[in-house]
Each structure stands twice: as structure tokens, then as C-alpha cells.
Amino acid sequence: MRHTNDISTDVVRLTDVVKTYGGRRNSVTALDGVTIAFPRATFTAVMGPSGSGKSTFLHCAAGLDRPTRGSVLLDDQELSKLSEVELTKLRRDRIGFVFQAFNLLPAFSVQDNVTLPLRLAGRRANRDAVERVLQQVGLSERRRHLPGELSGGQQQRVAIARALITRPAVIFADEPTGALDTRTARDVLNLLRASVDQAGQTIVMVTHDPVAASYADRVVFLADGRLVGELRRPTAEAVAERMTHLGAWAEPVGAR
Ligand code: ADP
Image (cartoon, rainbow, N blue to C red; front, side, top):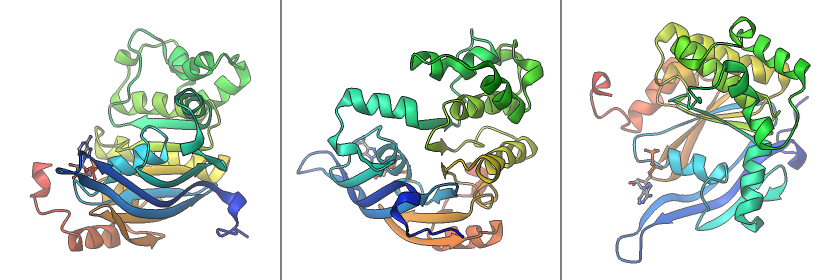
């Protein structure tokens, strides 16, 4: 049985997080008192209209940016108490990142891209662990290829392997399927889903896509810097309907 209220099961916990940009005259409140917890081995999608604070949320939760006030706990560590050096180390050791643009090093092989976070952390790449993660993403046969020799979907799977290799407490994914066609996107989402179900990974994913969001256990909705609702066991239809009510698609969908 899962005790979602038990402190120890929450990998990330934000309490009353406020983020304000700019000075006194021209300030913008990007996050306006956000409180939310992400339990271990769960997959959460974060959605909201453009400008609702999704990127700011991800940056604050992942220690890439500091909130103006409020608390962010990751693995029971209060991020605001950490120095820049400690934060950098925590991001490197405890957080995996997956971006829309893959962000692989073009001159490095698949295997060297995947093991890079370990080498940056001064850790040895255990050969079995590397093999396991390459198998997990279906790229064992491609380990010596360069990113440019792979399809977009394969490149994103390399990026996911790179995120998984450190066994991070949490993976933050920012529009991970934004640059992929529908079928390839589905493969990548199935892979993320499997890492939650089979390896107990915790994932927080920002997305515009209701189909992508439907792979999550829960979708949380942001509007004007506030959490305005959530859906558990979401279907793409229910997510799309909720987004319509938030005015997320004021622009024609084809224009995005
Ligand atoms: P989303 O990712 O949902 O599009 P953002 O988090 O990027 O939303 O932005 C939330 C609000 O904060 C917007 O009004 C945006 O213009 C503002 N904002 C974001 N980053 C900055 C910044 N560096 N300086 C000033 N305003 C910012």
C-alpha cells in the first residue's frame, strides 16, 4: 500500500513557493504560493497555458533557480540552505534531466554520453550498470554510434539513459516529446512509464501534450503561477478538456 502522506515517501516537496522576477516597479510573480509533493515512484505531468509558470516551477523544484520565498525539499534536503557548489553537486548526483532538444554531446558516442554524468561526478562507470541502462532504453547495439547517426527518438532514449545512469532521486523532463513524431513519442513515454513501474523512478514532466500527460499517474495544472487542480489516472480527453477551460489553447493548435 502506498502512503502518499508519509514524509519519507516524498522525493520532492515544495511548500508555499513564490518566485518573483524583476524589480519593485516591474515585478512579475511567476509562482504564487505553490505547495505540492512528489511521492517516490510516481510520474507527474505539469501542464498549464503559456506563461503560467511551468518552466519557473521546474527550475525551482530542480534547484536550477532559487525561489523568492518558500521551501523546496529534495530527498529531505532544504535547497535554500545549500551553497551554489552544494546545489550543483546535488543536481549532478540526485537529479536527472531530460530536455526537448536532447542536449547530447555530438562528438561523444552513445555510451560516452550516457556515462558522462558519472565521470563528471568522479564515479567509475560500472560496466553492468551501463549495459543494463543501455538495454533498458533499447540501444545496446548502438553504443558506439554518434548522436548524429541516430533518429530523434533514439537520441532522446540516449538522453533518458544518461538521466537514469546516476539512479537519481527524481527525473525532471521538460517537453521530452516536443521534438518527436507521434509514434516515437509513444516509445519514449512508454520508456519513462516503465522506469517508474519497474525501477521505482520518480518523474516530473512538463508538457503541452494531453496524450503525453496521459502516461502520468497524475496531472497538475498551473494557471497564473498557482496550482489550480489535478487529475489522477488522467485520460488524454479529460486533460484536453481541462486545458480548454484554462484557456490554454487560445491560439490554434496548428500554430504551436
Ligand atoms: P511557462 O513555462 O508556463 O510558459 P514561465 O515559467 O516561463 O511560464 O513564465 C511565467 C511568468 O514569468 C511569465 O509571465 C514570464 O513572462 C515570467 N518570466 C519567466 N522568466 C522570467 C525572467 N527571467 N524574467 C522576467 N520574467 C520572467
